[in-house]
Length: 305
Image 1 (cartoon, rainbow, N blue to C red):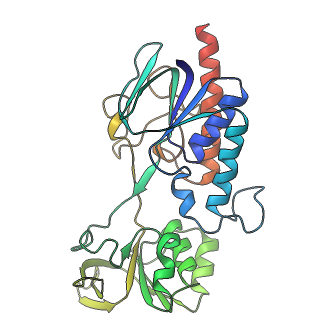
Image 2 (tube, rainbow, N blue to C red):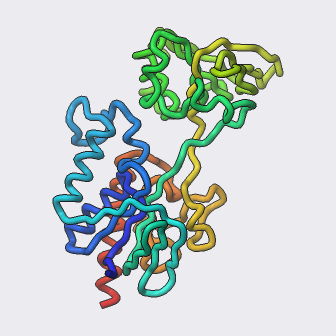
Image 3 (tube, rainbow, N blue to C red):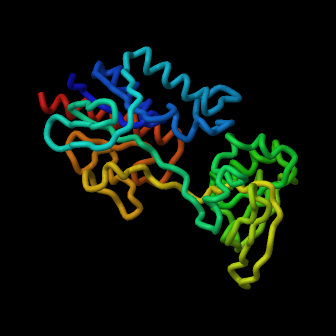
């Protein structure tokens, strides 16, 4: 079967593209190798998605998105993409289990958390070092943890951790946060949150589990130790674009370059969500990207006919 569109990735961008594609009567397939929902399924509270109900969570929003896709006839495949052939009028997506063909492809593979790079980070990953507060916060109930980073994700997760932890120390390499002012205000007013400025984590110490962090003051080069039971790292993301290198144009950070209509440099190939070069990576922008990509994909198919 040749689909009208194949969407690679089942996060908010992919599910939104699936919904808009299927509602336009396009035959639509979403390929996802893991859980549907992407990073939002690790978010306990979502209060900035317009129209969402009170106390909405990442999983609840994703469940509704997928339900809508089901209602309009989107097909789903649990498979891992190994290669793609994006040239020509019929595109081919080569996976572990099957190969799939379509007139258009929408890449919505998202991004994955970036490691900070300090010594023993990988060794103690899952043994006190985590990249998902929603996933692991309850393991640190009434314990002391650190958060590495100063952006929206770091501060949001730090605030969430205070529901469980005795204390949360934010370690930031600058002297001010990069997070939204509303988040900063919440963090500064939270009695459980402390700050260590102009500092980086040099090393994690622990035999079987994390016990201490070795910190370096960037201004004085002074080395100190911070006793913690856990460390949550939020220092950015890496786009999942390995399969698409040399297939579509990427920027220096390996994000896919698109125009405002989600077009890549290959006709009939689009990118949506966190995988593309953009200024804001939020659920609302991912969903918008997906809607635009599917709409323009439909117009592209009409132009072929």
